[in-house]
Length: 196
Image (cartoon, rainbow, N blue to C red; front, side):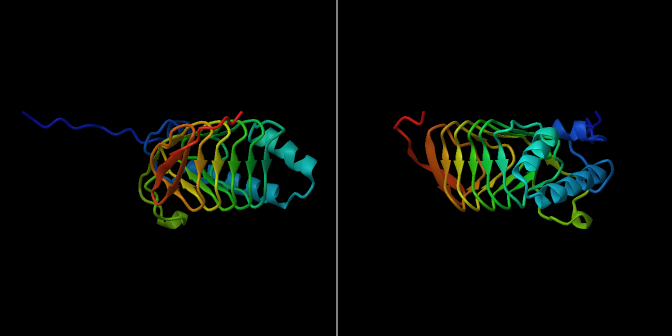
């Protein structure tokens, strides 16, 4: 009896990539989509007028007017990101939105943070991308506080009211109402007082 061969479907579009299908990051249309996002980030980061910045965020990222994102902001595709009301993203944030990245309401992201939905990427330069990679969604609940220099990895869910300590590497889910930190981040204690 012949061995059964499983065919892996490789994404041919950004929509298929968003659904988690493996894709060739160096190929088209992915390179073109990244180029469009890079130009958008450059233009956004040059703006100094608060009203202009808000208008650009609302129109391009489809986020509420209460969202604030400081320069320099980098997002890989700018197609798969949902940001809730009252979120504040501090300087030098990087979002790799291969799959959806969802931030709830009133999320605070410290400076130099990375939120990545790309699985297993080891190179940042397109000429060194692997032949294939894939992604997993990232979900961050309401009223989450992420300290400076933290990295949130693909497939992670962080519950409401959680606090992620500065410099942490979050590789697995963090429950609601928890303080987590470390490399990798682990829950250190629970938050018992009201966060409302």
